[in-house]
Image (cartoon, rainbow over all chains, first blue to last red; front, side, top):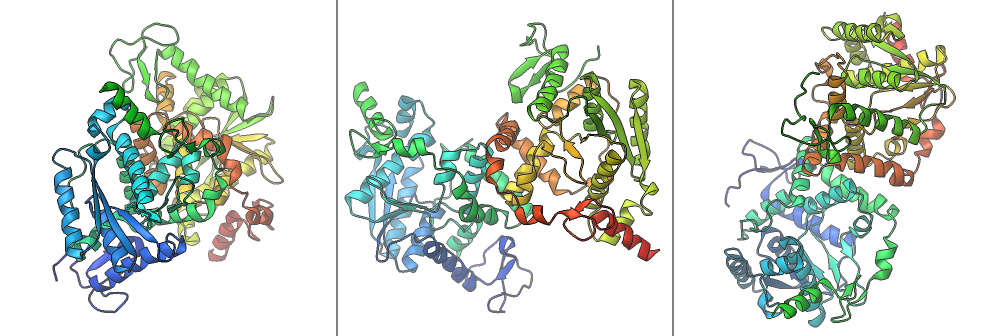
Length: 313
Length: 313
């Protein structure tokens, strides 16, 4: 087996599970563990988050959104190994120098696993690049990209009769988002931040099975499972506020191990409920007059974008 | 008038208040201001926090706890200038190389202002140094020091018939504490974090008039008011967790100006109330059987320490 570097220490350590030689040290769990037991430990923790939050309907059809990055490919791998009925969905965003290698990684993974994969290209339903859409909407590229992806995940899952969309959001993502939402007391977002977004009229159920595993753990998992993923960050992600919160939350984790998981889990268990549902927003949600997607405006963001592009053409 | 460096910029800027030449730039308020108007702005903001939170009883006698540092001496200066009936209290902690110069600064300030000052020495009521007390209590020196100071502030204020004790806690202190309490969901602390701790049997009212001004603003104020304070940090403060939170909150403030004040003010106004009072703790608070100070145990921390020292002697 390959040697895995950092945070796998070479010094003689005992695996807490089997008593054999441990090569991995997880400060957040105060745990020294061997590679074999790490894989079990990781997969069991994903499984237990799925069960605890009742993410999937038994025998439910799961659509997993895969970008080609380490998070989503690892999620796909775990879900397949746990025996779920899961199909991959990749949206090719036509980002220069980034989208082509991403698509290749996703296709290679699906082929090696003999797993079902749906591929769509942005151009099939949007006559513009993300950069053009960003300009026309006067919004950052990341915001437009997120909007388009959420819209499309929901749409394709509905059309192909999936029960749930699973995404690769992990502990670092979710704890950093929570930190940002609390620092700015974003009540609406605080109420809605949860590992499961329940289905409603026009909206497919959405789940985050990796919510309690960290980026570091996912990277070790991917390395041990020999998952080949795209390593470069999206060229549009530079300077995103979410990156600052992630740096901060990881700085805190380093000083005080297990801060992230305690912060997030306790919020879900005890404090999320006390932030009142943003009632105005919840009541105002109604189907988009053009496509039926839930929105607070007359038209959803995606249809607004499409109309603007049509006017320009 | 002296030139004041950083964050006082030399580039031609207009004062937003008087239209004259501004030398101070406050990113958190998106404000360029001249020195004269900064002093007014600063003192008005302290005054408005005092009024908004009804910190003082009209004509109340205020005991201000002064360490000799920039925060507490600036607080004393502002309270005197605002016309309050205020007396300084300095506790000489006998910390080698630190306490002597601190006492000198406090005495010099009182003399120059012709202000009343009460000085006590730790040895008058505790037959041990802070380091010895820390060892005997098996607690960090900062924890023991805080306990002794809180106990003594309350005691002296009660004996000398003051209505309220004012401390120099500022925006950076309070927002950093809030961040730490939220990250670890310290419900009891969250309920009690407020600019005013109301008086109760055996407990003098405590207030924090600097709660909405930042350390940076206090330093500018002290410089402009020519307050001479002790500059070196307490030798025992190294590695304190509170320092990590302060660094983080200031990092966020730099990236997103006014994060600190929004985070803290909104918590006080809207969210503090939703964290249930730590009822068990509140109900258990009863007078110490030895001295009458409120405590959750049979004996308060200070009497426990005194008894332990007596046993050892």
